[in-house]
Image 1 (cartoon, rainbow, N blue to C red):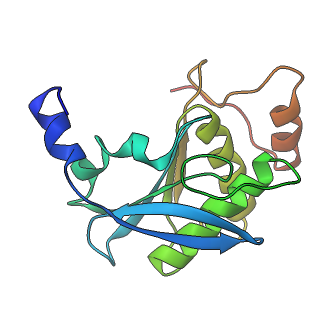
Image 2: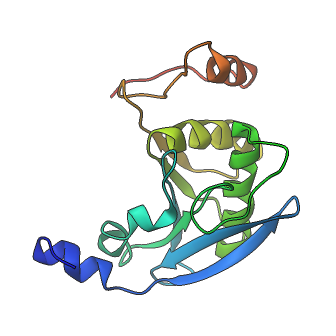
Length: 165
């Protein structure tokens, strides 16, 4: 592998990995950092995988128990014959986080499509105090709303607004 020294070094760190079954579908995950540390969950974008976080996760691992999840239909996770919904992916993220981190409320971070998943996960878990904070990124700098308003309609159920930093 080539690239900047930090990139090569971080990609050489071997994470723990495993699978959590969510609604009959195996969901693959990677974990870095000390078990028992505050949990930080990273969610990749569309067509990507948990491995996209490999260059970043070792920077976070000294402070956090970092969990990166392969959403179903991507990476090393199983496929869902009935198709995919943002709510289903959100359930996968929350179930993996609860299983892997012992049920502690995580910080959720999502990139692009993962930002949409994190927003829905945070909204559904907020009322149960299962999430500390979520950071969702998209092409507009906030939560990504696909054409047709599909995600906007989902988020409106959870009374989430759109915020820009």
